[in-house]
Length: 232
Image 1 (spheres, one colour):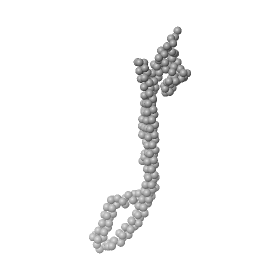
Image 2 (image 1 turned 30 degrees about the vertical axis):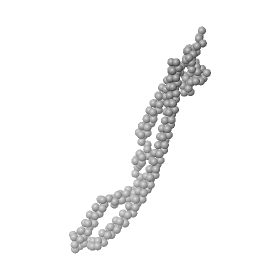
Image 3 (image 1 turned 90 degrees about the vertical axis):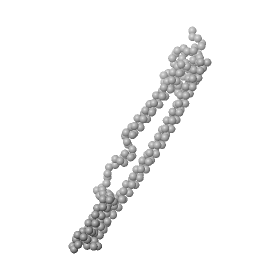
Image 4 (image 1 turned 60 degrees about the vertical axis):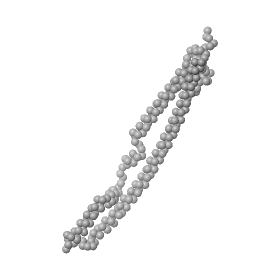
């Protein structure tokens, strides 16, 4: 005949001393959920032993640590994948195809050459040779005598043609600057949104960790109290 000082566990159907009894209604919800995973029929009115409860407490702590390690590993893999894909707006801007027309390319080339030391030195040598040849070499048969009307005509024609070409290049450069400003704004906006999302993820992660750590500490305190009660 079974002693009145013993009870039968609702999950293992094994007999334990009465001082080891733990009712389901006194078990923490997180631990109670783990018990229900193995024993769906377990209710708040049933009871288990202290040793069985400690097994599920250890299982809860172990499960939390495994879940935390898995989530960190997945986060690292996700970050590596994002870096590897290089799908940022900066990369897209660097890979843009040159869509300039032939006239625009000519205007850019003329503007680049006209604003370089190569053009200045070349033009200075040309003027020097032109004036020197008319003054010193062709003394009696100058093809452009002083005041060098032909040279002035050539310089005027070059300036008349060069000025609108350079203006065309400058106008197109202004369009590029406006487009670049828009893209810079898009990059800055995307960076701001990603930083906000990162802060939200970190806040969510820290909040969940704090809650889980508090839960674990409560479980550990319960286990320590049970051990002290058993010692007393």
